[in-house]
Image (cartoon, rainbow, N blue to C red; front, side, top):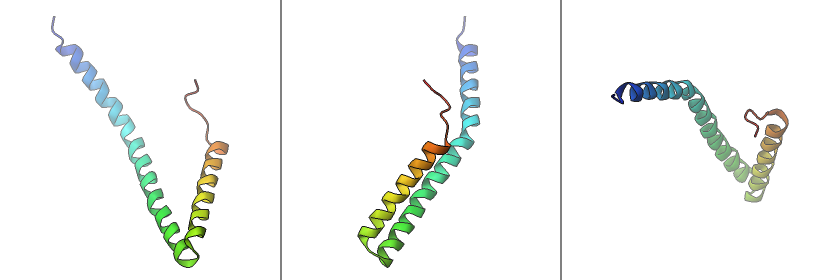
Length: 80
């Protein structure tokens, strides 16, 4: 008996799974990379207008606010 039909079915299933999640990965990467760019702009502008210490405080405050919002608004989708 040949492994070819079984391997072809497995490859087809893997490809469907990858295509289903592709849009999610693209969206995640877009927002992650946009966050890097926006964070660099905010940090640079704050450092130029105020000081490096102020830029660090702003970065810490935004990070804390982001973590708090994620904790408060997001729900676990795969609980253990």
